[in-house]
Image: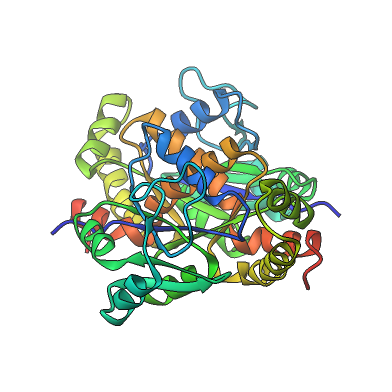
Length: 204
Length: 204
């Protein structure tokens, strides 16, 4: 029987750069985990590709999948649905491969309940002011939307306590290094590998 | 007030290669923790230098330090004392720097009691047979001593359960990479850094 893979969940406040960090990790050749693409009803931003960045769905399609319980987690966030299709995750873990999710905080909390043994990483902004700047300079949102995002972000920082690790996104390359280190370290955790060693060394 | 440093304890069965791994880690420029040199009453092996590999002491000197409670941990192991001078460890941690100990299993269990918040890494042999080969090919021990070491090693493998991480020493470079990753990951653990973030972001 194969050892089950690790479920790695990268989450954090809106605008903190989760997508950028995730893309950088998967651009490296030595990233040996599978990326699970999220599903969303929000409109694609410039450059985003359906089936690569997200599966873009209509509200009607998304609500049908919720009914069929085909989503590991889902949330309505700033007026849009986001979710993770369950089948791909289960299949990959059972094959002994690690799965990498990049999702919003509400969704991560749902996954924590379904997979308490998962590896939950909170990507944190260097400061709340910097978070504000990043959203403003994205240049496509109204002041009302920005204020709403800030309120949500403060709440999410309180939610940090539900995570195993906090990685500051001060520099994308450093954030990726830390995330890769966390995955390597988790594979060395005694609870995961001691039983294998004892069997190998014929110690009961 | 500075944040207290991390106490990193590398331990494992006799002959597994703790010293080799430790030397390789400290030969790398980016190893940013302090090595705490152990004290022992065993005779130096060829190439070992007093004050570099160990502080070599007589039994009388060592027993005097035990009386004065100047040892963080100590053990008698295969007829010799091994221990860690306490002053250097405390001083370095309080300056906010990480301290790296490479010690025998009995000593690690004592440190675990004094520093439960430390980071305990068990260096494991790829197999017990390979452990035996390594001790034999060192070529300086009697069969009786080897048998004794094997018995001790089996006991130590059961002790694996007292550790946070298990790193297989299949290749020295890979073992070092895993240990470095574990230290990076531990610095990202939520319990260590969430309070700092909340203060920075003015969230209570």
